Amino acid sequence: MPEELQTGGSRFLSDLIRENRLDEQGFKEWVFEPGMLFGARDKWWGDRAQRDRPHEGVDVCLYRNIAGDVIALPCGSLVPVLYDGEVVSIIADFLGRTIFVRHQQYGRDGQDLYTVYGHVNPSAGLCKGMLIRAGAVIADIPAKSSKRSGLLPHLHISVALISSTCDADTLGWEIMRDPAFVRLLDPLLTVAEHYDKRYL
Ligand SMILES: [Zn+2]
Image (cartoon, rainbow, N blue to C red):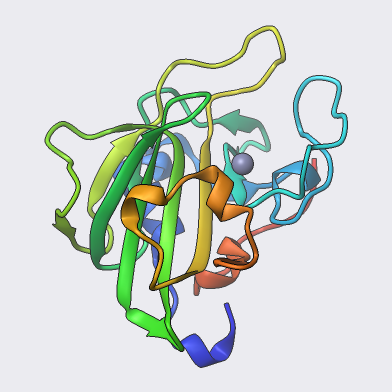
């Protein structure tokens, strides 16, 4: 996160641990394979071939417990929101749905800060226009996954500055890949706390 945005960081990873009681499961640290990270060129599943385009965010899926085992987040894991904001769009994606949340308090120079939650099952009653507080649960991770490709259920998070001229109805993965409207940021830089990035 560029310093000038001054979001103060997000407690997202702590909220994720708390909401899913991962500490009771012996949580020690998050684990990210190279292909899960922002800008990754390769897939972390299946044949690990090249992605069509650099990864637009980070995939949260694995953690290590105090016994040293690497555990996948189970289906149904709850997804908290990074900052106070407004739900502006919910669209379908290839594993579930994607929720776009706008955080206008962190906007600047004609752009608004967005956090985007991919491959999720939105919480009952969540809808466009709803105002939510940082840490509130907005979704869970659905069971649907691609067994054939070995793609585990996971949460995709993108953080982006998006032109204020973008109509919420046009938000989608296509526009997220358009540098004329969207500046993608590394989601892991928006979390103030320490995380472990040792690779498997
Ligand atoms: Zn992803």
